[in-house]
Image (cartoon, rainbow, N blue to C red; front, side):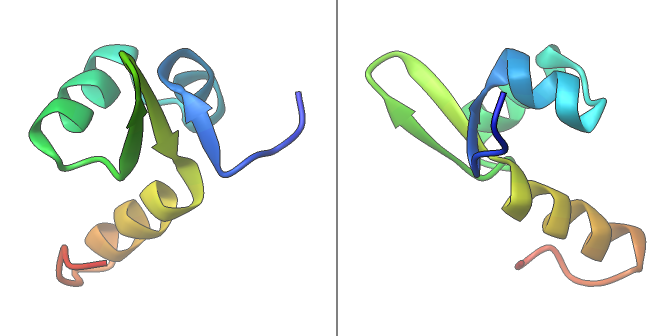
Length: 63
């Protein structure tokens, strides 16, 4: 699969190592960067990784 910025939850979980449960709940509560196409959540993986990196380094969550 090509590396695209937006991935379905299943693919994003495989690439990032995060659980599908975590990603799905994060999409629902807005803590995971995503767009919704119909009923499908598409996770913005590069933005998610930047956000997690900033949190790990003690930065603010407004990435």
